[in-house]
Image (tube, rainbow, N blue to C red; front, side, top):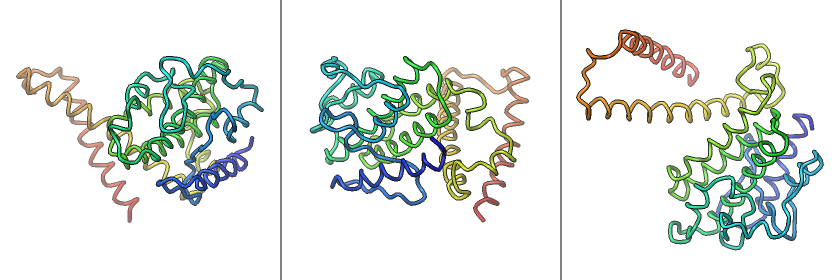
Amino acid sequence: MTQSELRAFIREIIKEASQTGTGASFQAGDSEAYASPFAFSKKKKNRVVKHYEKMGYTTVKEGEEDDPQELKVGNYQTRHYDMCPGATSLYKNIEDKVDDMDLAERTARLQDTLFYIEKRVVKEMEMATKEDVLMAQNLADQIMKMAEMMGLEREHGYIQGHVDTISKLAKPSEQINEVSYKEYKKSTDATPKQKIGNSMRMVERKLKEIEKLIKYNKKLKEDMGIGSGKYWASTRKTLARLSEKIKTIQTEIINLGN
């Protein structure tokens, strides 16, 4: 599948999802995130499943949904939550945690799609393509938007870890970040506007991780009574470099926004 075909593929799924009548809204404009309203249902296969079957993957067998880690979310029976105990724990009795069960069910479907991709990549192929990584990241972005709508963004913190697992199995040449600017500019994976938008979302995710790490260590310093004078010399030098780098990045972000 070429990148142009992939974009068309994702837009078709968004169009399919927009016809399910749930409270969430999905547009096929600049975003390449997609939803899958019939992901792995017993009666109907969505385009994600059909695409992966063409690539040689196998679909789940009847009865796999009886796994103790699988559960019913609204009218949807999960099939691949055995890949994520955190999702099973969160969505067990999800009706007691949210007001919009249609949105919760849609989010559960999307996660099942993500776990399906991870399961086939990790357990069957033992490698991932750039397409796998892109599709997984698009799914994760959409899931987190919906999680925020439900007021459960923090509880869905496990989602990015599944994308990272898939990314680690990508060949070096398939990894999104391992390209030169010349290759990035010429890439037909997305339009310039989409590249900027997707990159800024990635930066935001990374900044959240960095902010959390800094908060934890600041609290550790305070709780343990560690003065900065007790740091290793290399740690003090690293902190100074980081401070300067953050100033530079701040300037670049301002320039990018102007």
